[in-house]
Amino acid sequence: MKASSHSPHRLAHRPVQAGTGDTPIDGDVGPRDVGRSRAEQEINDLRDVAALAELVSDAVGLGLDCGSATVLEDYEQARRFDTVLMAGLTDSLNRLFSNDITPLRLLRSLGLGLVDRMPRLKNRLIREASAVNPQMPKLLRGEPLDSKA
Image 1 (cartoon, rainbow, N blue to C red):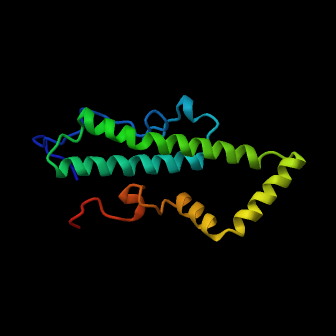
Image 2: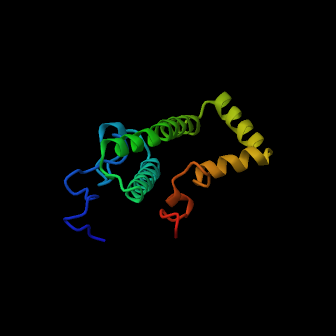
Image 3: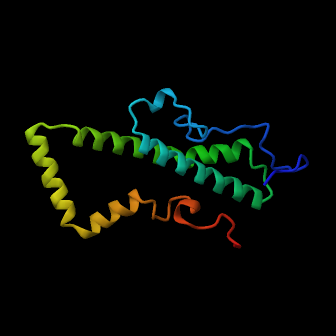
């Protein structure tokens, strides 16, 4: 849907880069992307876009300027923790599974075996990885942005 030139919520003159400096929406790779897996970048992109869409929708619903510094700061704050957490987790898992040192391989096997025998922990890890948790943006949970829908 194209916004009219009279709309107070027009963002055309204020471009936004999703990812708080990580991965731009247009797919360009920045310096912080080096060493990150493509899957991690794509998941982060989806979370960025979903969070931004939700904040913009909420701002428009309240009659606020969806491109205001306040809305964009809310977006940045909302994404900061998840971005850092995902980067750390992905890096740790990459280091753990790309290493073939015997003691580490044994610990890895033991850890995976324990998680497999702990259904509550296993289910929580699956929920976190699949974006099925209440802290994820609505779009990633399959919910509409408009609460009236």
